[in-house]
Length: 360
Image (cartoon, rainbow, N blue to C red):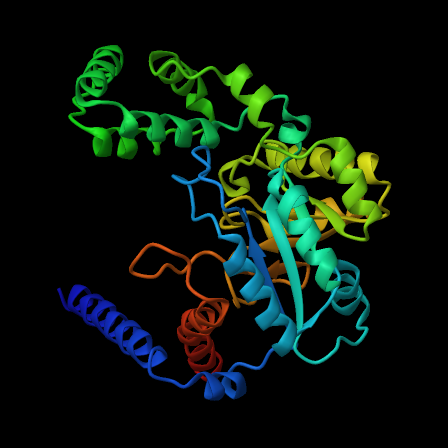
């Protein structure tokens, strides 16, 4: 009984401390954060920049308008020093110096907007960047299952009431569901994953979404030729695994295959001596020992990039700030200043807890 009460009291104390840390993180001035959490480098990443209404993306994460992205680039250029992947690589592994307020920019997934929109904007401003590509999508051979999900959501939400009810009834009957409206459908289909792709494909048939036609007309992903041109421009090309599965959910063999095979293909396309990789979703629950073993056996694989803001990790894992993560009340992405400030706020409880742990 006494032990249970002790554990309950400890859990309550931890929750109180967590709450106080989160509250305090919102009132600390950013100028003070810069002194409390000192950094020699920042890493910011995006996914898609476009003014188009991209039905295959917009139900997955925010699409950054071009003007907003340009504003962010200009702000970052005036407050930070952009660095290449190679500079980050040499700094972490060889101890070479970086300029003050160094910032490494990257873009994940490998949508065609990397070439059509982001590339010219960066070249115009002489800004280096790394593009991490999901290799199974190169050349538009297949449609990523999550893009299928977004297309399905968009279609069901835009159907007239009678047509929507008919489609939902057919899907309900096929899978023993009881969905009543578009929101129910969205919540259900967004829970499906790659092993459920056959279900997603059947839903697309119900909704009369023709994937081969969509791929031929939209060409949503980068081609080999575009990748080679971007590499010739001086950009670094990295891998984002083969199938965009969360590596921490896979066994070691599958995770190793996703990493090595995707990096090998990027190396084949670009001729790069070193190919870095970013984790889809995040690197949570992914063995760091496995990552070190993979690099030891494949020395041409570079650093790994995660999505946890300013969080510290082992040296070969670089965390990045998600550029479109913070949303305003109107649903538009926040300014990059707010995004970076939020990253400090998220890091503050970790810093304090680590200090208390080491102090104890």
